[in-house]
Image (tube, rainbow over all chains, first blue to last red; front, side):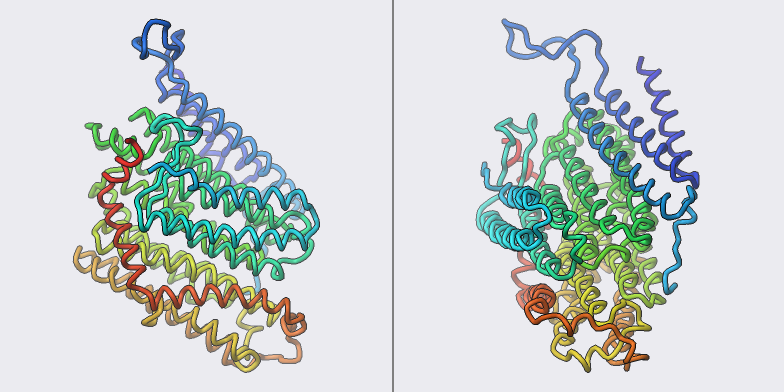
Amino acid sequence: MELVLVVLIGILYATGIFLILRRSMVKLLLGIALLGNGTNILIFLLGNIVKGSPPIIGENVNILREIYADPVPQALILTAIVISFGLTAFAIVLLHRVYAFLDSDDLDDLNTPDEDI
Amino acid sequence: MIDNHILATVLIQLFTAILQLVFWQKTLTQRILSVLGSTLAVCFSIELFSKVFTGETLVMNAAGWQAPFGIVFVADLFSSTLVVLTSLAGLAISLFSCVGISKPRLDYGYFPVFHFLIMGLTGAFLTGDIFNLYVWFEVIIIASFVLMTLGGRKTQLEGSVKYMALNILASTFFLTGIALLYGLTGTLNMADLAVKIREIDNPYLIEFAAIFFLLGFGTKSAIFPLYYWLPSSYHTPPSAVAATFGGLLTKVGVYAMFRVFTLIIPPSQFMQNILLFLAALTVLTGIFGMVNKRNIRKLFSYLIICHIGFMIGGLALFTKTAFLGGITYLIHDIIVKTNLFLVAGLMSFMRGSANYDNLGGLYKDYPKISLIIAVVLFSLVGVPPLSGFWPKIYLFGASLDANAYLFFCALILGSFFTLSVVIKLWSEAFWKEPKNREKLVDKFTVLPSKKKVFLILPIGLLAGISLMIGLNIEFVIQVADRISDELLDSSSYIQTVLK
């Protein structure tokens, strides 16, 4: 399971960075989204994946004795997903507005000449 | 010491913003609320500062969860000093915005978003939890996106795309760094991280995480080679917005670097060398950028980059004297950079443009206002006894002690070229006779005198603070001295949080 996730994270980071380096605005957006997902899975992976042992303390004991699944990474990922959802929504609207102005998807066209150097 | 009043300044900004949302499109009420809220925030932040300065570091456990399990808010001297400066800059910008921001922008929620932004900044300074710091950073960037695009002019939108893409990317890197740290230590509390990370045997893993933090914070604070978004976006929004960004947003990146690289990541020669090299190059790129600019707002954008290098250099040298210089510079820089962009706004009000070709004759028309602006420019350059002078002495001394000659040369060049561009600015904008006097659009003279006050008062206020910092430097050095001690020896911070 870990190995699959490691490969998946690698693919997501690589494709994300590749897309960000392209000139198209839509690909930039997709790249950012993929990178964000790669990071989320990275948090999930680094929080030690344990199957079938919830972090619940038994009736007669005071502390967790067995290996348990860490709930914190899931809380972190949930927060990160919500945040990246908001940012992506904003980014889509922004890029749409820019597209309406420029009539172009090319990032190199984003240079309306200013009055000076 | 546990004290739940730490969050007062954050909550004031939050409630101000919410109240303003209730009064949607009632711009007069929003303006009054904004100034009131900002004034209140200044009072509470000064109270917090005096409590921390005379007493000890204050801690608040969110919802009563003991550290390291819950989120903690920590007000040590560094945090509370920055909260005071942020609130002061916020008050000045909110006064300026009452007149300086056009009516349509105010109608579409400029003020609430501005207060959310200041809330994010104060929260980021006060938090003691690294994931919470990430969340505050997101609050800051989403608010700054709205402020940057509000108005929707073409250049503004183009600047925003670059700003948006690189800031989201920086946050992703920051989050990756947090993930690595969590994987290594299993905790997110900064004090707990500081303890646990020193038990790890493998320094390369920590340095790997440190590189991600450097990428994340470096992009936010615009160091070389991650600064490209700043000069291509900061000249596009209205001046009051640019003042918030220029004075405060890059500084929160510097603050985060100071915090993470002293408290959490153990100092290593590798990171210090990288930081020092980058600091010198940041100063130099700032210089290359600013010497040929004829638009004062672009010029100021590069000045920000140049001076970020000074502070990062202070961090990189990692000695007491260097920290003293870096932190005093940070204190001075927040006030001066905010003021510079407000001055740029005032000048474009007076002449209809921020370009040298249209500026000129300001000294002849407005001698008294020019005098205030002169104080700002002098303290930027660092003419003794104004505020920019003192930190540079410490930085010079520290870099000579550490034999960091590249950074030393960069410092000298940086100071010299700051002087040269300011002289050029003065002669072009204030002394030169404007080319076509009859074509000038002076929107300032026609304003009623009540509105003029709102444009000049904040500049005067911040210039006064710069003057105070310079004349009262003993106190500032004393504060910076204690901050440097706290940064170099974090054991008291850790004990206070984890007890």
